[in-house]
Length: 263
Length: 268
Image (cartoon, rainbow over all chains, first blue to last red; front, side, top):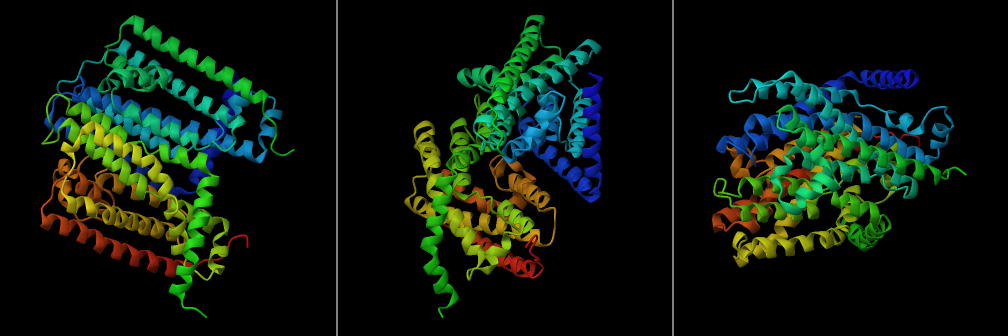
């Protein structure tokens, strides 16, 4: 276990060092992050300028959900997506052979092979939004157990997203040139910026169970706001674990059918 | 020796054929790439929910459906990724091959991207039918002049978008961080083009947005089909598109000329 932690720390250090080599770029990315956060908030600002609720969500609650969206996206785009894009490239070039040769689990090795450290700005922005939302008049009270639950559900949301990305990555063992499947997944994940309650009937079912974007942002935000009952919490964690197990299974099956590109 | 324009014209059919062949060869990627344009649908989800009980600032739920599906169609027909292509070719040195050809790269790229439009229409047309069927003709214009002007308006929107993306691609001759510029461009585009919401909902920003090129890349054709405009408004819409098309075209070609002088083929 410590071996894996050391490996992740090392990979993080390498990425950070290479990012710091382009310091101007770091600043540009920070400014960019500010712009995109503002753009993400703009529709909410316009809506709550005239309404006091959106599908049952008050302004502070909707802000908290948006913060979850920004945070999950920061982790996905800062760590998981770049790593998996890297993987697709390795499969295409054949250098994935070297990953398989290493005395370490291949999935762990590729899941954190490449970071974009400036996504930290997005994460900080998300935390600032949560603090701002709870400081608003009319904001729901925050208790310590709910905070803990909110953080645990954030981890679950990230893991659910990770599982989906791994399923996509596994597909690239069979259909090598499907790396933009990852971009498609990112585009679908974008729906997580709104509460799933804005959808009705079939779409809500799809975004809760088929492509579980609700697990990534809506449910964690509800948890932090203290709106979830025990049964639902158990179902969320259970569902996330099941999805993770499924992705692991598909990954192992996929890796068995890997035939090196170089030979 | 033939003159440059006649040479370009003669090459055009071949260029278009190559473009079609490229699109067909990479059809899976192309399809996935097209499907990644989900932004209008995501905004549609929000705004129809907002307008479900009562109209939001004169926009009913059906108006929002018509607006964002029209956005989706215009975006499908006008979007391109030439900036990425160009900066990649500058970095890899493949640009050198293009410079050898007796043809301005603007036309070569434009033809290759224009050739993809029929395939994009295959995706956009069913959406157009859904648009007509679901939100009804009530949310769309019935003015024959406006409907007739829709095609030139979309063509101009395509040209402005292409010229801007070409200019960003030409920046790769000067900068290594072209992607950051493209990112910034897309942020401003989202804000000022009506991609996030109809421009009149933007309040004070709307006044600025009306004059930016971004409005004429997306909002102009969308306004033309979803609203009934008087003659003055139509003239201003199309006039603005023409003016911005000319301005962005000149800017793109000037940037290209300045940039190509600095080009040193990498790895050549």
